Length: 425
Image 1 (tube, helix red, strand yellow):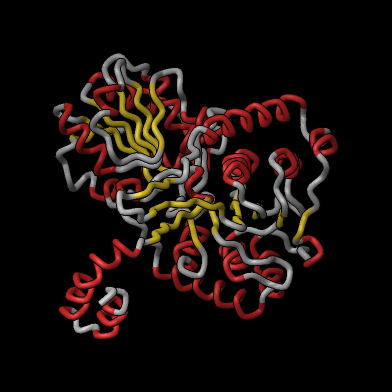
Image 2 (cartoon, rainbow, N blue to C red):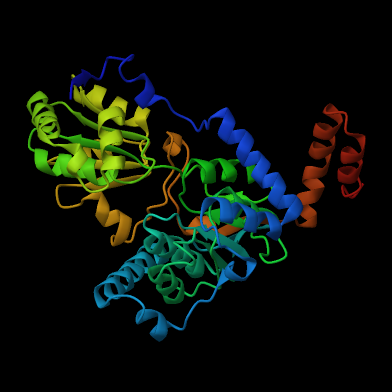
């Protein structure tokens, strides 16, 4: 594997290409599925699920029962149950600290202002097949903490029904409804509603290309968390980093289906060459999930040498990764200057797998370079705010002529009139 210079724009053009852009074929086919589900509802859901997930699927399988917690715990091993319970506790602690108080104050003339926050009425958590149980916790636990009354999980079936871990996760965090459905048809059902699935206010969760494009197309009819699509990872390492840890991180992320961008960035040429040597000596075909690993490492992974710290920081922010791993001695100088990342994992002892399962931070992060202007999933995603103002007569008397003048300058006569009516003259 070759090391490329950070200044080599042609070599990095594909890696640094940003913004969500599904192929025209995917855009068209997703649009057709959305329209079909909108028109035919449950019948379309059954047809697409038979085509993509389960040839024997029937409408009776759509809503899966959520067992009581004690029964659900018995479905999984003790270690898995303990791990998911620990994850729930950490997710809850992390998100409870994100609560914001309402704002209320009174001006000297008695005019009252406020910002009030309220929970969404309903939300759907999309849990892709890889890491479903953890994804459910990271979406449903914040939703419940925020006060969402109805939390729905959309989980592509594994075989004929959701897995035992999915059912346990739903029971553990108080999910209200579980549906064995995935892909663009799941997004359509949650956004538009069918006879079996009542529409929701917002859909969150990471998915593949089709799911992500479906979320983009339903936005406006339904809220979405953002472009949270296939995995992308940037590992930043200094000359003190452990090359085996770096390679381990690359392989771990490469085994996920649909990984889009994968890179190591460093000012240290020896570190990058050590990583390249380790990768070159691996027979990727013999590794677990080799069909994903081999393709991702051989065609999508880049090793990049930065000539200076400034160039390195600039490239991080241009890449705008969903996941940023800082395997460096002192992360503070980096964190002070990085503004475009979905989630950051600091130090040799914080592998990305920690964030995917147990850290308590969200694995639902913006991808495709959208981390420059979007945020990872947080408590705020499950609430909305609105402003409140109540003028006093004194305030309105002073504002009325100014409001009338501004409205007249925009040729809005009735706007001007409604202000003048309250002038007291």
